[in-house]
Amino acid sequence: MKQVRFEESEVPYQTLARFGLTQEKIEDLPMWALEDIGQGRRSPLLPIQVNNDEGETLKSRTRFALVRMEDGKVDVVFYPALKSSPLERYDEAQQKQLLDGKAIVADVEMSDGRSSKAFVQIDAETKQVMYVPTPIIARNLKVLAEVMRLGTVEVNGMQHGEPLTVVVGGEPATVGIDLHAKTGIRICSGDAQQWRNQPKREWDKYTFGCYGCWVMGDDGNLDYVPEEEYTEELWNEQKKNGERNRASFSMHK
Image 1: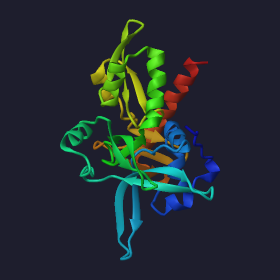
Image 2: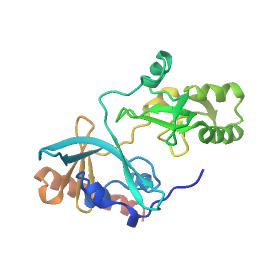
Image 3: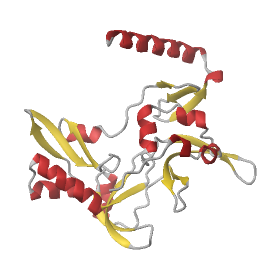
Image 4: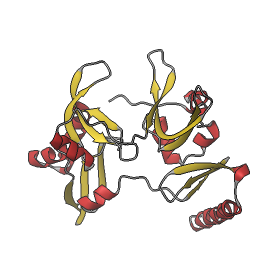
């Protein structure tokens, strides 16, 4: 699969800014999020706002990803949070699997209008339906099967959305298909339940950057506070964060 890579200078900040995602907000995201964006993967779920024709400010939440157009320029695709997932094209059994968080194989209409088999999964945060053509994941599964010496039955189970638990060095490890992962396959220590509980990236309540701070609310949503709007609580948290970083640096000297 061709490696996608976007340089920082290519990011269409003007387009993102029209939706309230300024360059400062993007640059203050955690490094792992910036790496994901730079490799064409989806951003975290972020707050956006845009003015409609009546002058009203509309607020929502969305992921975004960078895409390279035919002319070589870079643009943005948004994946807004939906109230429910559009699952009409799937049968009842497939819908149940998707709503249970599993990846399934189904016929999907590709961007060129052709129908093709793909692994399909729901993004739990946006309720958007994601898909990746089966040959891509199948190739990665083949490599994994050879490395871990997995049989046909075990691989078929993963292809039907079931994570597989194996013993590595005397400890349990679980592997399964997850379209959020770089390769479409995610491995974690522990059993299948721990694998299911792992996907969501853990954010600290406060993520301080150069220009402001991303704050994780009690509802799990992120909001951005620029430095000039810091409360006393935020200034105190930034001070504590700096002290923790200095202590950690001293321990590793």
